[in-house]
Length: 328
Picture 1 (cartoon, rainbow, N blue to C red):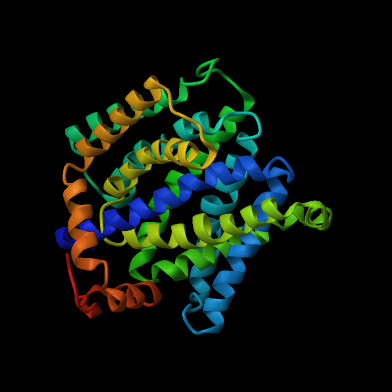
Picture 2: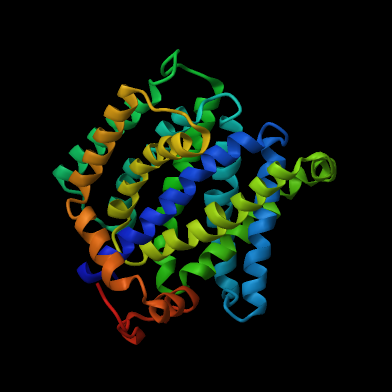
């Protein structure tokens, strides 16, 4: 159940998750210079799993009911293992910008799936906004010398996009029964078990990897995986999936901005134009995003009690939920 008053916080949480995921593109490209895609994903999930094991030992994560385990495992493998491996394998042969274009299909796919699965309605303005935003992302992908061209990695990118969209939609109904951090932990643990097929190559990779790459893998496991997916689950619990997913169009924009700041890659004029289109499209889908984010950062920035209680436990029924101490 979502309310209008909870949507500003949802958009802020989703925005932070998108920024974290955007940084992962740079980290993945860097780590792939020394580690294979399968080993990279396995190491990333092992780091994230350690984070959630620590929380479970501290009593912050509860175990799922036995009847729910098969479905939760399948959702976790789809949304984490399949998505992350397909994305890492795709970036072996395609650029981060092109990968961003393919992942940017996820909002539209999420909106389509949300109609029959969740019963959500998508307005005509929202569809126009998605088209405009995707057009902006496409412009960003054309900034390279060869433009947008076919590579085998494109198919893997499409698989990653479909897995991501399916995960967001399939996960949302479970947020009534389990907390966001619970579901993220289940997904990461399931994906870690699935990726153990790449364990034979891990000892060699660990012994030969450089310190910068090791630190990059650790970062990928903690921030874009453990933290970002938890923030995204919190956002899905407070706003329609189609509305939250539209923020994914900001991912390639944020990726280029991070590349500019961290790697010194200056964006071209067509990249800037694409970024403006992507931002404008998101504004059409969520016309109140700038004001909502500002209001939420102003009035909820210090709501430590609210965020901690929400991330750790969610009541099993809507009627049992108490209003947070501070609301936007």
